[in-house]
Amino acid sequence: MIDNESSKRNRVYLTVPYSLLEKVDMHVEKRLEDGESRDIANRSSFVIEMFKLGLRVYENKINKDDSEKNLDDKLELIAKNALINGFMIDALFGITKEVIDKSLVVRNASLLEPDWTKEMKQMVAGKLLEYFK
Image 1: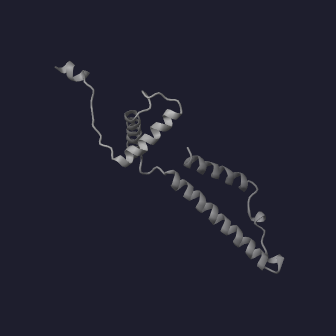
Image 2: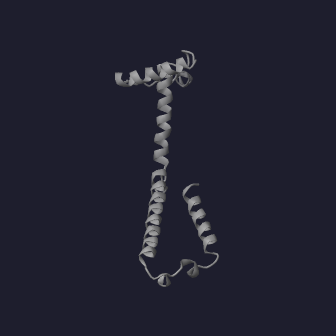
Image 3: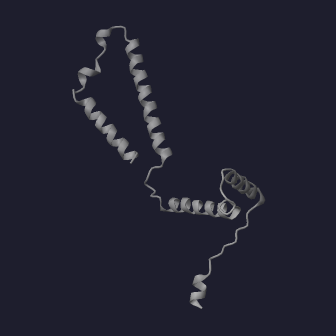
């Protein structure tokens, strides 16, 4: 009896709404036009393939670490920093343009250490590696 049950295939019946069935048929037709045989390109195989894909997405969603940043968060951080830097540069140049007496302008290069740019590039590279592993 145990051998008989283990040799059976596990069957699950899935009721697909007609609106989704039209989309499934559209994708099956595209595969048939691309030269796949009817044995490979049919409703059942397409629905099973989509089910497996959906299951993988669901498992990744469950196993995802909450502290891990997603792509949208990383891109938001980059865009925010780029905008802030742009506004700061515009403000600095705006102040420079407004000052009539050029002797009152302090040059930033004189306040920075010579290795500052090298250290800054290393820090930026480290942060980018942290976000884009």
